[in-house]
Amino acid sequence: MIQQVRWGVLGAASIAIQRTMPAINEAPSATLHAIASRDGTKAVALAAQLGAARAYACYEELLTDPEVDAVYVPLPNQLHFEWSLRAMEAGKHVLCEKPLCLTSHEVQRLCAARDRTGMQIEEAFGYRNHPQWDRLRELIATEQVGPIRAAHATLAKQFLDPADVRNNAAAGGGALYDLGSYSINALNLIFGRAPDRVVAALEHDPQFRIDRLSSALLDYGAAHATLTVASQAGPAAWATHQQLTVLGARGWLRLNFPFAQARPTPCVIEVGDETSVGAIATSVHEFTPVNQYALQIERFSRRVLGATVRAWPIEDALQTLHTIEAILASARSGMWQTLTRLDLKDRL
Image (cartoon, rainbow, N blue to C red):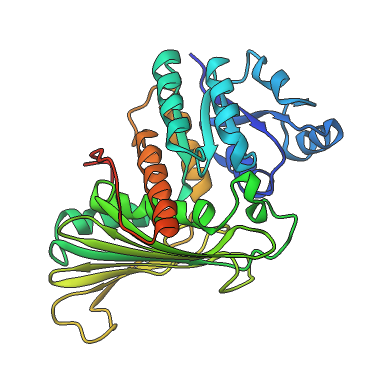
């Protein structure tokens, strides 16, 4: 039995260099074993910088390394499906950046490959590993603010660089696939399932041809949710503007930094009960800085090693993609779009 999961990383994306590979080095159950890049010189330099034992000049070579147990895929969005599939077929467990795929059909194929190969695969939503989400789950389950009636998620940042993959429509760019995947995933976690139907409006950049402002109303039957994501609005700092509000029958919950934390940062969940006035909280749950990327790597590595830990099957990603596809269809037609329902109960 191996005592640590030996990780291989495909590509030299900034999120891998700045967050995930340092997180692998921080996690007790993981070790950074190999890095692959199309630029072999870059791979060698990064391996030396981050302490990886091996460097490869192509992704295929890393997948044939028998000592690699798990692969992290931070490649451009349109490559996620291909290399996640190839990694599982090569006998590697997979942690793939969001969005897991660009279509629900591709997610279905990954589900089939997972079942066929027996490999573990997850979509890399680091936020789900943050302790604030455990607390949110408890607050919702115990109906601290009553049954949930509505929720609203907002994410925004200025991504103006023409070379940024988020501005490349052919690479699956745009606000909805990038920032929207967070909000949709989170809203589906809160309500335990995907919405019944959606209606949406998208505004596109005339040069990049990507959606830069996307809003949607999600109908969960007895509850509603709204989301707004923008890739050319808000701050230009190291983190997106982000906020999540949950409205209950007897109060509300508000998270001030619920999603991607590029740096470990203090955050809070504010609670307004039935006695609260306006937006003034009646109680506050505070959280000290934690590295949610290291928590993600440690949890997934322990899962690979056989421990009983929380897991998020990629059927969740299937519902996220169903929702994104419905939002895109609604924006084109100007009409409500109905989704095929798949229960996600108890996944929060």
